[in-house]
Amino acid sequence: MRSKILNIKNQKNKSKIVCLTAYSKTIAKILDKYCDIILVGDSLGNVLYGMENTHNVTLDTMINHGISVKKGIKKSLLVIDMPKNTYNNLLKAKKNAKKIMSATKCDAIKIESNKKNYSIINNLVKSKIPVMGHIGYTPQYKKRFKVEGYTKYEELKLINEARKIEKAGAFSIVLECIAGETSKKITKILKIPTIGIGSSKNCDGQILVTDDMLGLSGFYPRFVKKYVNLSKIIVKGVQKYKKEVKRKIFPKNTNSY
Ligand code: KIV
Image (cartoon, rainbow, N blue to C red):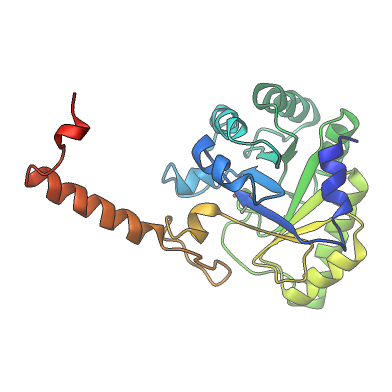
């Protein structure tokens, strides 16, 4: 197994795994020093492209952003999301995952679970393509947002799903918007690390969409903590720029040729 993947697996029960999303070299370069994993998430459909959901994100879009992000990374593990309908049969999954891996030189791909695609994960892993799983709220397959795992029935279903993904060979798994007690049980049962988003501190690591936690996206559900309000900072800068252009303060001679 590749050493970066092994390092992530070895962090379980030792050190919390720090993950964030990036869609460009500029952001990846800033995050790299502080993150264990950088994910090029298909959330870029909503966040960057203003789509209603992630369903129409294309493979080429993920590859282009993956190539950009890779240029900003020196040490973090780079994971790229496979968009919807690019892995719905064994042949297609292998062809497209290989395309992502070879074009971007990423370390792994992420696949959302639809409770049926375990053999696809297994097939990719057997083809030496490291896979991160994703259960709970999986925007490619769920029609509306819902926290899962509050009832015993849901809890058992999620535990079963997580177990099957681990058995299929995934090296880690994202738990999205799963009740804290259920996340705790899944994290305890699995040998692979769980990466939570809206799934409590009981997970082995945490991930957030960077644009959300920096206050850029305007998306602030309960599970997002806004660490800075970059929008406010940008507004201040742009207001000042506008004022200076209007008043002919900018550009000065020092900014001119
Ligand atoms: O697409 C994405 O950014 C994700 C994370 C929210 C885990 O899947």
